[in-house]
Amino acid sequence: MSLEKTFIDYFVQRGHIPTTGSSLIPRPGDPILFTAAGMHPLTPFLEGEPHPLGRRLVGVQRCLRTTDLDEVGDPTHLTVFEMLGSWSLGDYGSEQSLRWGYEFLHDVLGVDPERMHVTVFGGDDRVEADLESLRTWQDLGLPIELTTEDNWWSNGPTGPCGPDSEIFLWTGDGSPEGTPTTDDRWIEVWNHVMVRFRQQEDGSLEPLPQHNIDTGLGLERLSMLLEGKRSVYETDLFEPWMRLLPELWKLDEESERIVIDHLRSSIVIIGDGVRPSNTGRGYVLRRLIRRVLTLLWRFDQSRTLVDLPVELVEHTLRHFHQDEGVTLVQQVLLDEEVRFTDLLQRGRRILGSDRFRKTLDQHDFEYLHQTHGLPRELVQSLIAQESGGSSAPLSLT
Ligand code: SER
Image 1: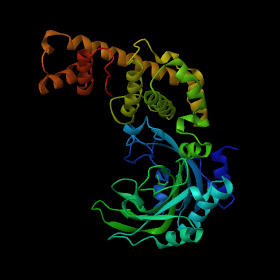
Image 2: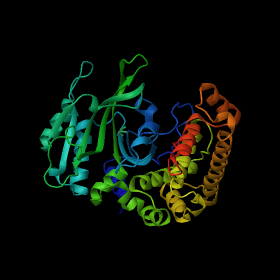
Image 3: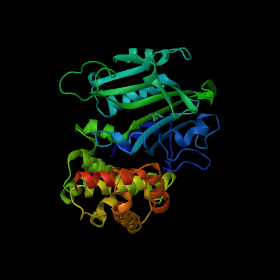
Image 4: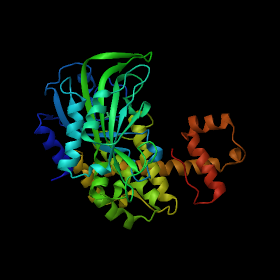
């Protein structure tokens, strides 16, 4: 049985109703670009609006985090990932949530408690220490670290927030050492947030009408730990990618991870109805696709997304339960490749003219952007490439 199904079943047996999970596009009126946390679509219900399915929910939510973009390429960060989540909307409290968390990891998935460490909110000048969670973990006999900032969760400058308690698993060889804040071989897998406040514009905390629990367990990361792999890319979730892509395009390990992550994310974003553009969501998509092309062309200009195996597009759309046609997704990727190729050719031609054979000033950058559609970063990359030889990278544009 898949990990998603095992998780859902476990919480259904404890009175939770499965949500269908929503797309990456937030509901109308929400100012954020993409759903970035499992709780995001539930914001009004955490703030007190009754949820039509009740007070106990469970689900899998796809999320996109551009805040982690620079870290993609390491073993664990992804732009699009899936969050397994359980929620108590004004129902049970942290003790129950943490006990189920422990039981699921230990009894259902067989994780050795010797490999677990937890963190708990230690209190600050606004909110007192989370004693209920502290006592629960003490009772379960797990090692505990108290922190303040690392155990406070908010979804942005305003909105629902509260103290959290995080479960970490040991990934090092040999016996565990140190604590989650002193040894990064402790990897966070499950965050249980006690959503009890709403942060206001002025930074003050307003108590919510109900005490909620919002938990999030990253599917790819958990799979990596359970399968004993050294990166999320080596898990079963990425099987066709790691089988097909390295054969097609030879890249160094970091670039390979970035290309896989960005292509997979681009397919999911297109599958949720976004098209490349110069603003908002479309711009995020455009940047992801162009970064892939930049990496692919770094050593071989003849590479093209025409060669992207159809199996990878199909697999991704199927995994994320998306109805968008495979051909349409391929076409969107190819159109963007053509547009980017044209832009680069135009840029090289224009920058090669006498007028720009000098150090460019602010006025030149504005002119190139406004008249020729060449953004500053692209111009700078082309200049760097020109002076550094053909293998110099084009920066993300
Ligand atoms: N909202 C919390 C997080 O994103 C738990 O779901 O980590």
